[in-house]
Image 1 (cartoon, rainbow, N blue to C red):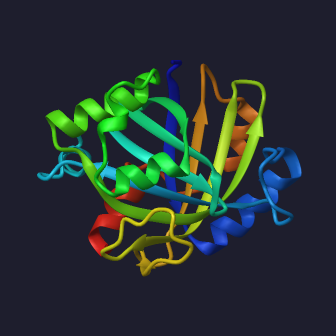
Image 2: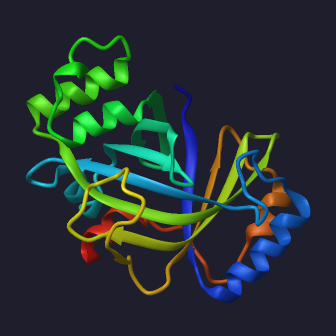
Length: 224
């Protein structure tokens, strides 16, 4: 599991228009986008009864982790269980595929199947669900436009239309009650391995904008 650098910037609509034009002219989309160069991500985040993941984020704890389920464009044939760990500005992510049948069991409170799995991340989640009472907490959904560049393994994403579920963790339901997670938030994320090429630094530079510790999960919990 390789460490990656990760930075986030909240941008306005004018920034978004400028950055999108620059990035589309110089970088490629990944292979999963639709004709508009985007896809929809839905995530179901887990947390403890005392909101450990949320509190560690708000308190600025340098080393923290969170678990989530994720699907793309509402397609239940590809669902991933992910564990994202942070150590200052370094990010580590592990993921494993799970089935919609397994997710349905989990959402119904049936966790026994997880105990004897040969997928380490599934058994780790099971251990945390037993030991820390980790449970599904909230749904977050948004539109993402992803850009990639091979040197430095750079990935830049622009997320918009961030919405959060209201009293629902029914991850597989086509439609669920939701509200915007804030005032029309647009978020740019920059991820790379060892280095960020200079020309990309120039592409994404915005006067007066600085990296910040924004969390879609934390923003969603405020409104959801």
